[in-house]
Image (cartoon, rainbow over the protein chains, first blue to last red):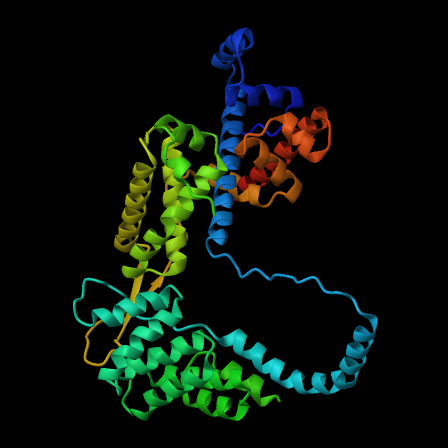
Amino acid sequence: MKNNYNISQEKFEQIERYILMNMYGKELTDFKKELKTNKQLQQKVEEYRIIITGIEEQSFLNKLDKFHTDLNPTKTITETPKIFSFTKYAITASITLIIGFGIYWFYNSSNSNQRLYTKYFKPDPGLPTVMSTTNNYNFYDAMVNYKRENYKLAIKKWEELLKKEPHNDTLNYFLGVAHLANNNQTQSIKYLKNVIKNKNTNFKDDAYYYLGLAYLKKGNTNLAKKNIKLSNNKSKKDILEKLEKR
Amino acid sequence: MQKDTHLQTIKADNFVKAFKTNNETVLKVIYKENYRRVELYIIQNNGTKHQAKDIYQEAFLAVWKNIKNNRFFPKNKNSINKYLYTIAKNKWIDYLRSNDYKKTTTYSKLNGLDIGQLKFEITENYTENNDKLNKVMLSFQNLGYACKTLLTKFYFEKKSMKEIALELQLDVASVRNKKYRCMQKLRKLVLNNDNEK
C-alpha cells in the first residue's frame, strides 16, 4: 500500500535535514526516536533518500556529458570588427538582390543533392580491430585511426601500404570511404573505381553505393543514379525514388 | 589551458573531499585526462567510439560512487587514474563476454584473410542500479528546466540556499519554497512511472 499524500514543506525540510546529515542535538535524538516506531516516517525517509540519490546521480551523469563535449572543442569563429559603411552596404545589397533569384534557382537543385547525401551518408563502420593479430598490423593500426575519425592519418598510412599492393581491393575500398568521410569526393571516386575493376571483389555492393553517394555530393545525379542502381544497399530504393522525382 | 600541476600536490583526503563535494574542476580534469586511453583500448578491441563513451562514463560513475561510499580511498591522482582505467577495461571485457552481446557473422571482405566480420547489437542495461533509482533518474530528466537547474544546484553542486537565492535574485524563503515544489513535482512523476507498470 503506497502513501501518496503530500507532506508539508516543513516536514519535507525536516526529513531532508536528516538525510543530508544537517540535523543535530535534540532535534536529531527526537527524530531518531520517532523513526524507530513510526513506519510511515521510515517509508518517507527512504523514499526521499532514493529521490535525492537519484537527483545527485543523474546530475553527475549530465555533467559527464558536458565534459565529454568539451573534449572535442569546435572551431571557434573569430569575429573581426567591421566598420559600417553605408555605400558599401547599399551596393552589396543591390548586387545580392539582382543575382539572388538566379542563384536561388541554381542552388535549389544542388542543395537537395546535398540534403539527400547528408541523409544517407554514413561512414563505413570499418573492420574489427583485434590487435593481437600480427599479420597486417599496419593495416589494422590505420583502421584504429579511421574508427577514431582521424581520417587524414588513416589515409596516409593506407596510401603507404598501397604502394606495395596497388591492386588490393581492401586497401582501395577503405581509402575510398576514408576520403569520402574526409569530404574529398574526387579522391574517393578514384579509389572506389579501382575497387570495382575487380569483378570478384567482396566490396562490390558497398563500393557502388559509396561511389553513388560521392557523385551525388559532387552534384552529378546521373552518375549517382547509375552507381547506386548497381549497388545492393538497403537504402538504394529510397534514394533512387527521390532522385527519379527530379 | 591551465596546467593541473596543482592537482598533483593535492593530498589524498582532499581528493576524497573533492569527489564527495562534486568539485567540478577536479572531476573535469580527471575525466579529460583519462578518456583517450580508454577510448583507444576499446577501439583496439572491437569497440566503437560510442561504446567507448558509454563504458567510460559507467566506469567514472563507479569510481565516483566508490569514493563516496568509502569503498575506495585514492592516495593520489595516479591511483584514481589507474582505478578508473581498470574498471573501464573490466567493464568492456565483461560486455564482450555477456549475453547481451549478440553476434552475426558475415564473411570477411578481406582478400586472403579469414576473419569474420562481427556486427553488434547493444541492448540497454542498467547494471547495479535498482529499479526505483532508475525511475527517479528518468523522471528527473523529464522535469522542466527551472526545477532541474535548481535541484542540481542544491543537491549536486551543494550550493547553499543563500548562494542560490543570489543567483536567482530571489529571497531565501522563495527559493526554499521553489525547491519544495520541485521535489513534490518530481515525486509525482516518479509515482506516475510506478503506476504505469
